[in-house]
Length: 171
Image (spheres, one colour):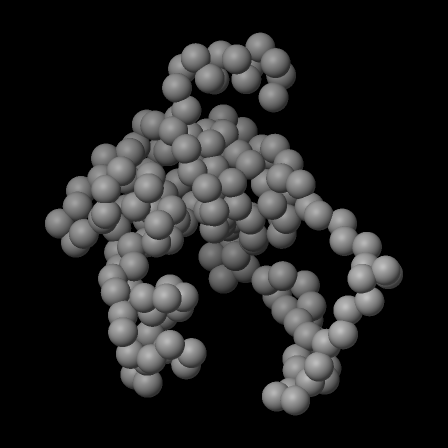
């Protein structure tokens, strides 16, 4: 066993095949991260956040071949756990602006399909620029491009009435 730093999520626990993990339920104290509202001029990095903003740019959907069970990218050898069955998994990439800053956001699979409203295909031409949305996910700093990027776990269009209520309530 070993523990190493992971640039995405903190630390990784590396285990060997015959490792057993025994959890003492009496001593487990789990601090669940709540999703916090953040803005994009000084975003909260590497923890679950929610951002409201307008989509100011977007790309056509792209696709990758993923496992039908776990959605992991299929290699020449197939999925290590589930074999060779694959499906096209959509990727939607957009730029979100909250009035204070902007961030590239990316939706994968079902999140992308649900936002678009139907299953995305290579012929799909989504037009979402100008929509006011709420997104939840994790924002990370991409050092290669020196920009912030968010992997989206949940995305919703916001109606004007919802935005007015949020502004009145100060959230």
